[in-house]
Image 1 (cartoon, helix red, strand yellow):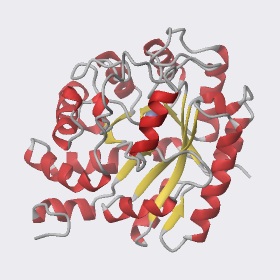
Image 2: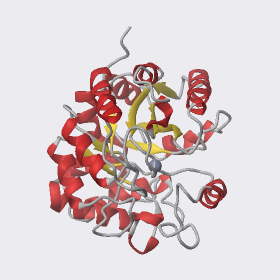
Image 3: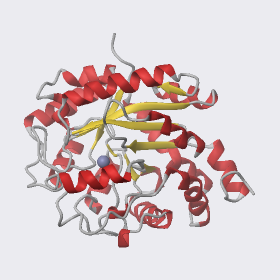
Length: 335
Ligand SMILES: [Zn+2]
């Protein structure tokens, strides 16, 4: 019996490959319990993008969260490494640590100021998306009227390209994402988005968006959120179906994982009902079906190996593909 209860070949590959999880949401509060990060390490994850804020909370909250998270990570430097570049991510794996950077969901965090992009980059943010479900000054959210990328949003894309931060199209509206992908001069990602063809939910993305992302050289990260998987089933089989579908559409080199696993199911349910504007009941009806736990990742590796993916493709999906584009886009902070 292997430590992850998977086949020997899956265990070996999962341990040896660089495993990249493009998004995890904690509570986005300064006193969040980051000791839970151990669950990612124990599940073979080598890099995690930790959410540091989203449009639901006031923009200042993002600064407070980044300060608190950086403080905690610095105090646990034996286990975690705050990465500036992909070389740091590789170094963390070689040293048996988990690399982390931060992401922001929604440009309310910029408070309308382009200069905030570089500040967040200096604080370790390496990925940011436009609008969290509802429209904001940068663009359209997926549950709102699709007004497209605004002039401010365009400027932000340019500034993100300049400082070296991944442009993320998850949670944003169709037209906004297509326009952002046209404007960006470097590959763009959907850090955690599933195929709408398999589950007709506004948070999921259409074939045209998947193709446009691949055309930029970018990567789509599949999430494990029940609402966004066929039949509201948060399981690795449903994630595998997304990977197979998108592989047939754009090729395995454009696929990755952004599990969006979090710990506080009760808080999430409270959020869903307490902020029905951000999560309209038409899209989030019924009981919250939950999500795929990070502990299931080795099982997903095994399923990919038996589900028609080559070993090289699995390596790419687990992390090689996101690493490839981060190597093209990320830059160390300008000093
Ligand atoms: Zn999200």
